[in-house]
Length: 453
Image 1 (tube, helix red, strand yellow):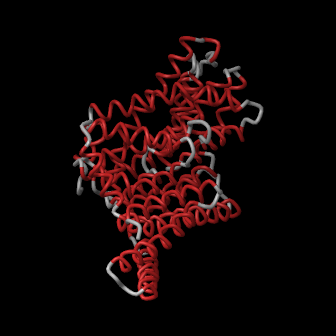
Image 2 (cartoon, one colour):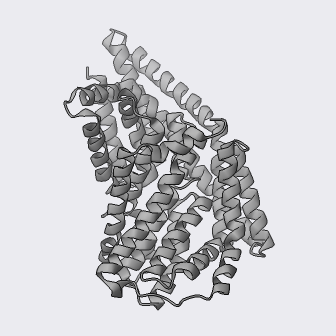
Image 3 (cartoon, one colour):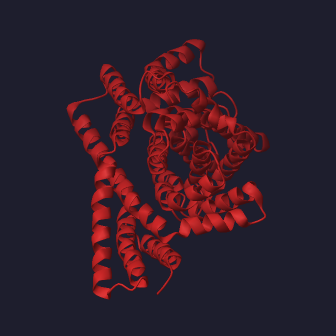
């Protein structure tokens, strides 16, 4: 008879093997969660002297019941309605070229500075993140718009590609972040509070990215030569062009902050107003809408399957008592809360070298959240730290999914050059985590003021 904790460890190892074999994350978690539940329950019944056939039969029944119950719970969770609406909002924004309007406005105001095009890319990525909620969408759309301009002004490849890859990660932090929605659902936290918690860190991280660009061009001015200075009329004209998009963001996020909308209502309002703006601008037709809806449905189905898989996997981990034992071990170490947090951060950074952000989030939540609860950490604050660490993983070698996205847009740039360009931004993210540890109110100030909780 093996211990439940051993079953949990074997389950995790099996999961990582399946992921290494390129099995989809959701299917891997469903398989391990389902079979693990059978084995763990059968093991418990055998340990109390139950007949072998009866023990395994009960294990199967419990696993099937758990699969059906958790699937229904995930599919009927009202809060998850934010996912299709925000996905639709981002798809409309991307297909209608709103990213170009944001980049043009940022470029006209900042392009004449040294490194200004790279800074404009970061600013535009931050703006587009508030529409798309997706890191990959931000990197793809901004890469197509910004990289040709930076190539035209002879920007160094590491700075140009690094700014796009890093800027794209803001889509994981700035609301409406898909990663935050999944974290909120799995940890039973308020989606609205998590969204609010991401605003100030998102702004600060954007400024840190721009500061990193400034330091790069200060050291090597030729890496980011200034562009043309726009006239005053061009500046205001570009700002006017981006104004409808910015208003959509203000209405959506502002409505949540004031308590006028719930997150679910805000997602619907945001999708509707984005559609109206794109329609008024004459950038949508029937064919585009067909593609947008199909893409949104596909993305939503993928995310829902991952959430259902997580709902099956998490009870299995709880059943093995592995998270509880980890809490006991870590809290008994003479390293204090900061030491435990540092260990968690280092583990995440290591996993980020091999796993994609959403996959890492759903895999680690069952283990790290009990630790955070055991140490009495604020789960909203902790969620923001996790999201930023996941962002770091998106640009870390050797996997760095955003780096591969940029490589697909700029195939002539060697992969090593792109990875070289991400390090200033990687250290900016590390600085952001340090600020959050020292000053938790950076993340908690707005959630504490959120009307209606």
